[in-house]
Amino acid sequence: MREADQRPSMSSRSPTPLPSQDLLDDHDPEDFSIGYGRDILVVDDNQSNLVAIEAALAPLGRQLVLARSGLEALAKLLEQDFALIILDVAMPGMDGFETAKLVRSRERNRATPIIFVTGLSWENDAVLRGYELGAFDFLMKPIRPEVLRAKAQVFVQLQERTLELKQKADELREAQARAHERELQAQRRRFEAERMEEQLKTLAETDRRKDEFLAILAHELRNPLQPLQTAVEVLEHDPDKPVPARIRGIVQRQVHHITRLVDDLLDVARFTAGKLELRREPVTLGSVVDEAVTQCQSAIAARKHSIGVEAGAEPVTVFGDPVRLIQVVCNLLNNAAKYTDPGGQVSVSWGSEGGRGYIRVTDNGRGIPPEILPRVFDMFVQERVTSDGAGGLGLGLGLVKRLVELHGGTVRATSRGTGKGSTFEIALAVYEPRPDEVSQSRTRTGPRKAALRTVVCDDAPDLRELVADLLRLRGHDVTVVEDGASAVRTILAEKPDVALIDIGLPSMDGYEVARQIRNAAADGYRPRLIAMTGYGQASDRASAFQAGFDDHITKPASADKILRALHGSPEEA
Image (cartoon, rainbow, N blue to C red):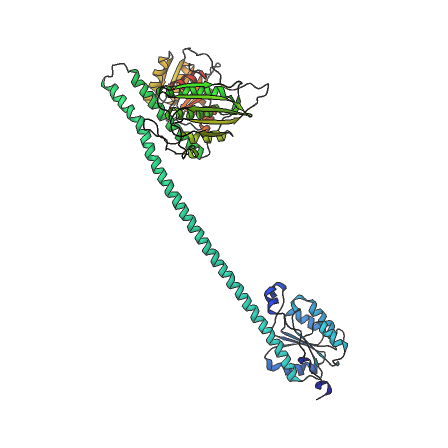
């Protein structure tokens, strides 16, 4: 054995280790694009050495790729990855060290094992340089085949172990991902099941409340219908006898009650569908209170209540929908009258405090129990019971809250408890009109008594005849027609002062009637056209005005409302 071979073999030294398993766990080889191959690259400029190395490594069962220079070796690395590189140091042109430096500079090959083959002695500084450049081991020439094979086998097995660990790490990550996905799916199923259970409970509660509401609605509608039916039967018993004032009062009250129920239901439907629109303008709180008290006078008088109005020191103007604000105050007044025993006291006050206008409705009635007070403005709250045992749909105060909030205001209720009365207060922002702005709030005008020539057009015989009778009792000259075509002919021929026209007419609807009259009228003739219809949406009003109508009133309309529309006056004609 040569002297060089008698020296301690470099295999006894600890070779530069492969990346540890912790490093592989922390840094996925794929993250750094590290390449791992199965073949062995042998680089030597001597053909005899290539043949000898090829023969020595043949038992490993790995394919050998041969390169005769550093440049050719680099070209092979561009084509594939290798499990091991056996690299001769002393090559012409680019030596082994320069080749190794370029190999290590490539990200994919930074972990590929390199065994240098050299004829240099162990003490030569060039060997240390080789380790610095990334050598895993050195073999001294002449090479013993069994030593080369053993060293190569160690590095190949180490790489196989690395690949196995990488595969297991990949499998572990995939298993963890699958477990995480299963847990997410399980949590999603639990969440969906809980949501479904909550929805089922909500639907069940909604269904229960719907059934209760329908039962109460049926009760509330039957209550006024029964006295109406009885009144008709009493009148039929002696049709020629004048109608007693008591029966007239009963009919008026019950019709008013039914009208309010229907109006409240329609408003709830409009609000829920987002179709409840405001027609806002400057309006004084005094005019709103006066109009509401006038409209509710009969309901208050029916229960023999006394009512007082306390006006503020200065007029207060707000920017709101007069019709809706009057509706709010009417609902509060009707609520006070309903829940105050006969002979009670109801008061209304208005004014301004802290830059906001207010309207307060106070009664000395049955009060509000503490447990109901927080929910008194909720829809369908019906716990309060009147002195006569009647309840309600629980819509009025709910609509009050929603209408006030649409105006940007607030409403609150206070009560000292059962039997101690209650106070409802609405607050709205004060509107400061410009000096040149003409107030559009309602003002009272003197009654107008002028007789008018009138046409009433409706396809419902009972309705048109009763409206005609109402107008004749007020001294007006009335012609009735039953369809749109007849209305156009009659109006153009007789040239009446005003016409009440239904929208839902057969063949030719009321819109077309108005358009034809406006287009055909000559000599400056322009009758006042009033749409009297069951279509009460804001869009229906807009369509009526676009067609040429001057006013729009919704059925059922009181005599007061019909007569006001007839003259275009805010007060009864």
